[in-house]
Image (spheres, one colour):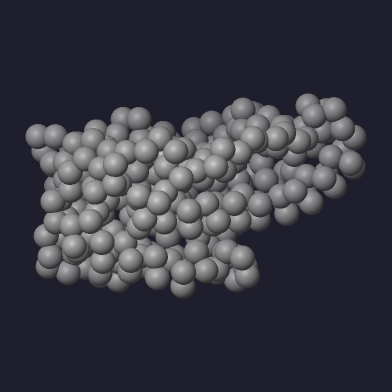
Length: 295
């Protein structure tokens, strides 16, 4: 049996097409940005093959277990603390060991700067310099990028992840030079509101309820939230809901109506219209595209 995904404890985010298109046009983001990101623990039977290659570069960092890959006919063994870089457009396949399936952090990324960094990463891999000792600070950067994307696709979040991605990828290219400056994270009403929205994905909230949760008037709250994120609070809430819906479509067998209810939308037709407007395809098409097919 072979599986593309569907592993217990896995996490994954796939950015909507419209958000990716926006990244390609934004002056700060267009040089390097994430399109997909996730973590697969003990990914038994994991296998992917792309004969036509991927539109993005793919980075996989193995932190436990073993696996292997073939890129343009060249085979590589992947052991704990090895990374794997698959260049965009390269014919490839990769897999987890049956005896000791790998646990991996992974991401897809694009952009002109991404092309340059991917080339450096691939050069190191080809010369067997792809062993990178586990570093909690490095993994913390990954989780921080994931958490910000999980919080929504505001320009601030996307910009932070783009800039963090430069640092994250450089930690694989120059592992001996890698260091991390500790930063203190502050809090503000917009961030507090985003956390409130995340905790209430399964509910239907009004603007007044969200503003009240951070002790602000609706007009003042809407103004500072849009300034912070580039979206109205309700637009942002819908992004979070569709992100959760994508995960449920990809990783569960819940009916589409049940997924709508799980993100606080009881009207299945409204849920489908909203999903299509943000993701560019219907919920059913998204599920079929991401379907796990055992072989």
